[in-house]
Length: 329
Image (cartoon, rainbow, N blue to C red):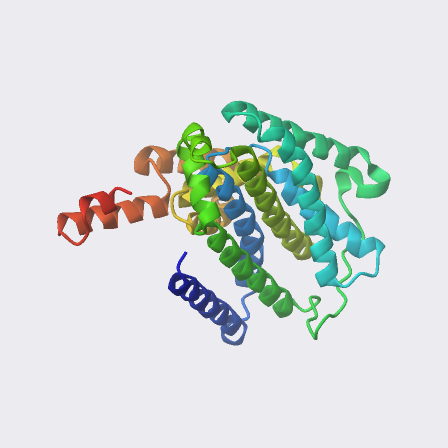
């Protein structure tokens, strides 16, 4: 990524945060704030998974383990220690990164479907640990008693607008960091590995090390999303580490698109809106949502942003605005 592109991304991020910061002065609609906080947690989660799927070609069915680790790690640290929230957040991310190193060292040696299912096996191991270790995790009931929210740097997360702005800031920072990673030489090396791992090794790229690095990075950002969600619900629940959580992230990527960086963010918003709309009209939520996703996959055959970008490129090519080879990158 060039310095100009990096500066442009920062300006866009600051503008987005400024727009979010103005919202509480314009409206007091709590449903909107709920959507933004939940969306921040899930968008971080889905975008981190797309670092694996879209950029490295590593389809993980167990990415939810890191979302759960972030939620439980942060919640337990806050309940059992007097650590300030920023330090507790960093400690929970360090825990997720350490677990990702161990799990990734085993999984990234595997290929395709074996990688996918071994990551799922590790996630189910964590889920079983959470549900069975009742004295520590609360078992099926999750972490009870709420999460303490001591004031730090004048920020009081017990106030809803502060939690909203804090979640928005973490979302913007997380997206900017992942965007920088994706557009760095590291990110382009991942693309080479995705397209042809054998050729990448011939070019001198250490494939195993690169895959492990992106696995750890993705796990850490997923944990950040889990920590935000634990603040939102003031607790943590086994569902955060169960296999449907990973499926939701895959759905978000499918809806928004895996070829465009902001695709998972768009997919997250779409999924949350679909959740709210569908549950108002029918109790058969799973069936209705499945039909919508089927329409996307069969109708567009790609995510919404992927479809939009391809459409713009085809029209630009038809009018001579882009060379043909650029339009098909």
